[in-house]
Length: 91
Image 1 (cartoon, helix red, strand yellow):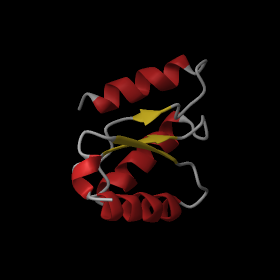
Image 2 (tube, helix red, strand yellow; image 1 turned 60 degrees about the vertical axis):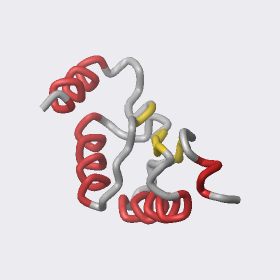
Image 3 (tube, helix red, strand yellow; image 1 turned 45 degrees about the vertical axis):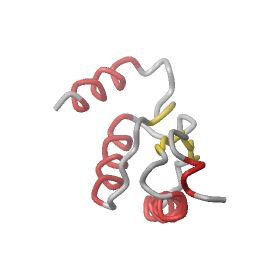
Image 4 (cartoon, one colour; image 1 turned 90 degrees about the horizontal axis):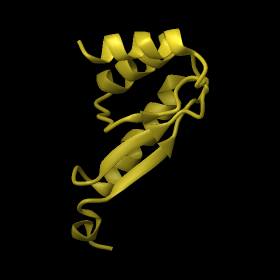
């Protein structure tokens, strides 16, 4: 399949491994395979708390992984955590 076919596509990747290097390796392999035209997103399936989410996003960024967004990083009832994420994301 030509990479041109993948333009304007989005791929959502499951993240949340105990070792962030495993998620980074998976995301990097996908990025390398599909090229820069495809938007990458990630779904943590409420695997983290707010602090861990920020740490993982920083690790992804340091690993050269640019995500369009992260889905369900923390449980929906952790309102203080979402407030923290919103404050930190706006910096």
